[in-house]
Image (tube, rainbow, N blue to C red):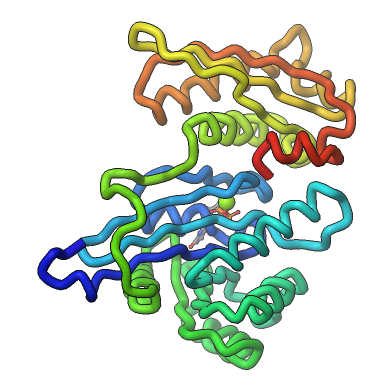
Length: 298
Ligand code: GDP
Ligand code: MG
């Protein structure tokens, strides 16, 4: 906060909404300038709500990733959509990310409907404009500006940083006046174990492909610091024995690879030596079980 002029200080919650893979995590990371949420080329990785905190001299942005919004057929999907809805309801401002395609995807329509129903101010960022010619962005802006009364629309590239300064300035401008909500040195209010679970999930995605991680849940059961290193025990829950077989691999080769890669990522993240114990379990219907969903943080 600037003590000379507390009224000028802005703060608030920004819900970052968008379909899987549009670049939400990349954009949040660019704003907070840290590898907080997990970025992968595959969809559906960030299932827990990631909060990133960006503290500026005269503002504090609290960014909340919203999980995928899509047709809600299973309890898992329904709970993802409900979580997104709640994040938008509780926000001061919505940042909606989409791709530079001159047609509005059905799931993007759903997001626009949620935003309209919430009556929240919304900034649209058309991401990945580095992938196409500038002239092709104008028709996209035109289509979206007719679909909803966005406060502002910015073509950006979360990857190269193009347009990001203007976007960040607009986010600050539209936030309500108020003091910082979190201590200035904090970058996230999410417990470390969520990040650890996300890092393990990321490695499961990388090593096994699309289908398996979607059906697995990672729970960090214990996290103990001992003379300069951390002992972490995590369970990987799967629905079926066949999924467990894939995860464990021939003579345990797959789980060993996942464990080694995850440990390296976790060590880099925590800046501590890590001993990681992974256990693969068959927990039938974990994605359909409300209690389990709560425990997994959905
Ligand atoms: P999320 O699912 O919305 O969180 O998307 P991610 O941030 O995980 O990004 C998905 C993929 O898109 C990753 O491979 C990113 O590197 C890539 N990506 C994100 N932003 C951009 C961008 O501005 N330009 C390009 N070319 N790729 C991007
Ligand atoms: Mg993400």
